[in-house]
Length: 503
Image 1 (cartoon, rainbow, N blue to C red):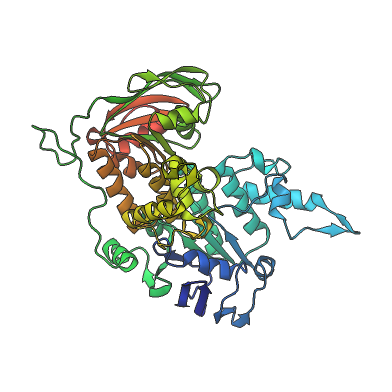
Image 2 (image 1 turned 30 degrees about the vertical axis):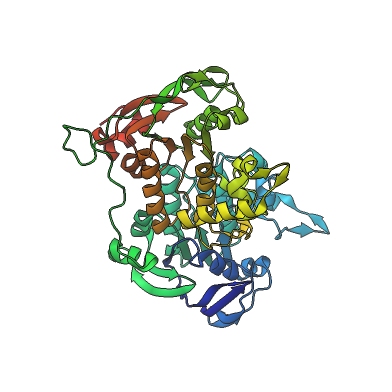
């Protein structure tokens, strides 16, 4: 890709991007949210047309009018927000737009057979090609999207945050498949905000910033982290996690101060088939982290506390007062706010402006004598955008047009604008770049320092240990261990997740 330019109204998203990928290499594409990565891969996949520049494919110029053109050429894209159709079977999704026919009739048998072979290659022979996508977990949906690329014999596969919804065993299996593909000459463009993944499977790195290529062909395994982060952010990387408040008499730098009074109490919480006998507390000014594998019930726990799922047993108390089961409005009035893992599907009104998404939980404060004050709403939203460094800053822009990290900031801004006293955060840094992640870490610790309680779920054990005062380890819908973060290390947590006992 040479000199790729893409202009949107008021925004020059790409300003002369260059990217060269060779057969059999894993080329890692890095950059902050808003750097231009998503726009670049949409152009490479045929979803958008560049305003200037050229794409050379196997030595010849390539013009892509639509995504099916790219797939026919051997270019497959696996998006972070998966493009699967819930009402269709897995095999139908794999062949969507590339269906096979015989005698004018759709021939599904070879499609099912090829889909099954691809799923077995990925180590998921348990997934039935005839089952519907709507019944799959997020991890299984990711596997289906990868199977689509394998079935169509792609020569270049673009993977946008492919491990975000995968458990560690599934990540290991994916990396095995990537190794097999590259050994066969298939090229992979790999986008991830997890630098440890880049070290593990990457060959070279290209870094984008503000729509430009600022570095390319950096060795993935040996380029210092400080250099990569500096190229992405334009500043030196400081320590990843903010320092906790230190209690008197404890000279450990990562020790947690004594928290305030209990804000949230959960006793014997149950959700049929998912949660059983869960007890936990979160104090004012405390960050409590939940570590658990995919399927452990961690997300369902937050949703049940919040009232999005109706619990079948137990109690949830805020300030000692019980919350009604399945009552989200009551939870919000009590001071709870939830930032869910699937922010696009569960948290945002994508076609509404940023301002409305920020004020959604606090609309009554902008009502004056029966009239809604839109000017006051926009001014308040602009202040929130400034405080959280949401980019771009235009509050009239639809939330759909923001990058993943900036969409996450909009969700947090919504709850910070209200009277929230307890934040429930499910994968708060999923799909968020290194620079924005550091900002979110600082924000979470600052909120706790101001007396807010935080209960967070993360697949990143290092993140749970680095941010939390206390850590709860969850397996099979139950809390199996609780300890101060300062008394745990990553090996101990991983052993608890796998075996149920610390090292």
